[in-house]
Amino acid sequence: MKTVAIWGSTGVIGKKAFKIAMNSGYRIVAIIGNKNHKLLMEQAKLAKPEYVGVADKNAYKMVQDILPANEIEVLTATEFANLAQLDVTCSVMAIAGHASLIPTFSCVGHAQRLAIASKEAIISGGKLLQQFAKEMGTEIIPIDSEHNSILQCLIGENKTSIKELILTASGGAFADLEEKELQNVTLQDALQHPNWTMGIKNTIDSATLFNKALELIEASYLFDCDITKIKAIIHPDSIIHAIVKFIDNSYKFLMSFPDMELPISYALNYPKRTECDLPELNLEQIGTLDFKKPKEWQKRNIDLAYQAVKEKKVIAFNIANEIAVSQFIKGKLQFTEIYKYVLNTLEHAQEEHVNSLEDIQAIIQAIKRGEA
Ligand SMILES: NC(=O)c1ccc[n+]([C@@H]2O[C@H](COP(=O)([O-])OP(=O)(O)OC[C@H]3O[C@@H](n4cnc5c(N)ncnc54)[C@H](OP(=O)(O)O)[C@@H]3O)[C@@H](O)[C@H]2O)c1
Image (cartoon, rainbow, N blue to C red; front, side):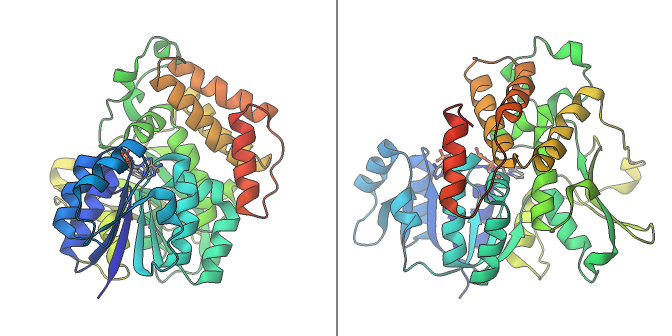
């Protein structure tokens, strides 16, 4: 029987993955969360996994006190990441932020397939993660809708036929605003995403367009493609998620209702397509598909991805953005200061040379201490 471990099972992606896994003939052997002990316990009662991993100390105590110790082993997230005997068909990685990094490397050792939404781990893990997965024979299937679409478009194609990868962006909460109108926007404003329901970090990353910048780097690692061949375009309706342009100037793209149901279901069932709870598109109602150039401030933010790759400062970019977003959430930075914070960190960061997971962690710690 197919088995799955779901990391971040209480988040937006994790909850959907949990439901899809239950309906796709998987046995859920492990769920891992952080603070939402109530939902973790509900999921544990439903799926009866062998393990529940909890990162937050208080939540861990709550879960440990309530779940039956003789049936389910409750572990801290670190204990869980080191669980040598775990061997699953698929690990879903849906922890937000760089907290996903070490668990992602752990998944590669424990799973035949890594179905991954956590772009931050793909970016900081970089080539090291891709090499490790190759060595361990773990296939990486992206859940991010753009990358999942590219994967689908590339089936039957030769990598040498790719001319460009084009990722679409809705533009996020401030898609229609000019730079001067961003001065007084609030956290609540930034959380009003027009098309997608996402966790808080991803929603703010969409508003700054750093989400797209991160996704350009993510695509370069996942598809081993030079970042200069990867572009972003604004597509407000989020119906087309990514486009592959080939050397004969033909274009392939995937259209679907904007809902993560599809990429999660595809990643769990790959290479099979299965029915899923995704609304059909009413093409007559849609009528036309709209594409636009990013506004100047959006392009400037997206372009930091090219700078970060060129200067070998990708981890610095990833972590600086995460720090800036968390400062914005706490009210310590204005929305427009997120860009300035990331740019300033990039300017002071050192070129990154990574040979091990320890090297990555050292870079992350240096950025956090402001020493990079
Ligand atoms: N949502 C989307 O539509 C979407 C689309 C594409 C890609 N992604 C990517 O998917 C990832 C998850 O996004 P999301 O929207 O699902 O985020 P989310 O709703 O904020 O969920 C985050 C999950 O991570 C868990 N978590 C946080 N810190 C943890 C830790 N130290 N150890 C273990 N678990 C921890 C949270 O647990 P608690 O809830 O229990 O605290 C929660 O289950 C992100 O990397 C995002 O960029 C999301």
